[in-house]
Each structure stands twice: as structure tokens, then as C-alpha cells.
Image (cartoon, rainbow, N blue to C red):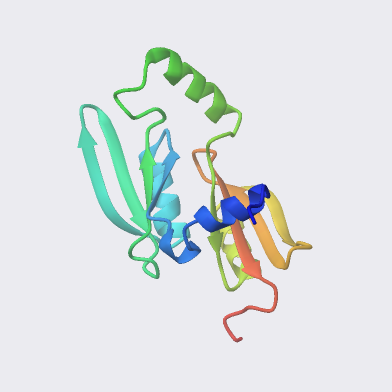
Length: 159
């Protein structure tokens, strides 16, 4: 018997989640040196690449714990195929804080918060227990990108 339930059709056509993994994310930065100092010196990321081409610069960083995941720090609207009108739209969205942000996991949200706050980063949210089972906090990096750090409640370095 055929069913018209859209959830049944959608579920059967989905890939298993294990087949989908984050490889890269791109963050717009205006000052690569400030952003690099933050990601490298405050968050402990390793620098994996620093490439310049035709007046543009792309810096790739990543966590030593996740060698296959990269964060690319690039100038806003760095793609040369973007039209001038699209560049203006992107700049407007970035100025409003849209299109920028990345979530990280941690095993000690409070210690990480203290370290990042001490660096002078703009605090968006102090460590807070959320109803969905995580403790999280949020900052803006030197370029204004939102960074959220999440710890599953009950998970710590000791446990």
C-alpha cells in the first residue's frame, strides 16, 4: 500500500549521517594577522596554510585533534567570480553579523571561557546551561565572527 506521508519519503532518501562530515568552513576576516593571532594563540589552533594570490590572502587553521577539519580565514567576498552587486550584499550581511559563525565543542566550557575572555575577545554569552543538555558560551573573534563553545553537560576532562 502506497503512502503519501512526506516524512517517509524524505527519511528513506537521506544519507546516513556517518557519510556527511565537516571538511571546511570559511570565516570572513578583515585583518588576517589579528584573526590568526586569536585562533593560533588563544584557541591553540595550528596554522595549516597561508596563501596569497592577486592581493587576496587565505589562512587555514585547525585543531590538532581534528586534522581533517579546516577553518579558512578569508577576506569578505574573496571569490573572484562574485559580482560587485553581490559583494555589496555580502558586505551588508556580514556587517549585520549574518553569514559568520562557527560552533566548537569543548570538555571544559568554563575554563575555555576564562581563557578567551582574558584575551579581550568580545563576550556575547557567559557560560550558560541550556535546556537541550549543553553548557555553552559565545564570543566574537577579532573580525566579528561569532564563536560558540558547547560542552555536553556531565562531560568533562575528568569524566
